Length: 124
Image (cartoon, rainbow, N blue to C red; front, side):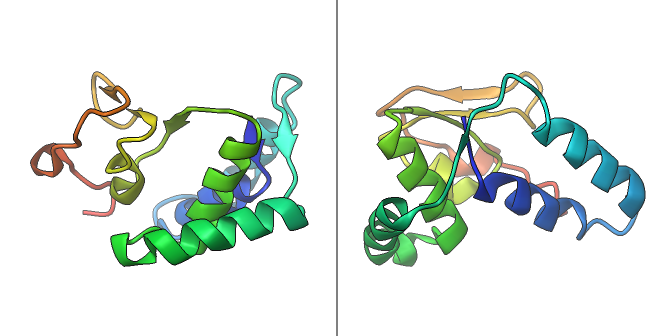
């Protein structure tokens, strides 16, 4: 399941990497989003209103608007697992979280606290 905001979020981060070829990046993103096994959840008024509620209660924790749209999409589809490298989302212990950037991937069960001292960002 992908919120329609996720390809934009991924693109936002990939296009910010100076070493990546923009045309190859675009081809990769298009290949990814046209796979048959992906279900997109469009952002509609209901999801937007839920996202606004998430935003009100999570902005001080560093969770932004795009993240709130993702969380609202997950809630409406009863999805409890998120794959992310976003440390603010990794802190959300109400979710099952997977950070695929770690080797091996970091897997946090619901209720498990994220140890931020082990977090390394790709932006370094």
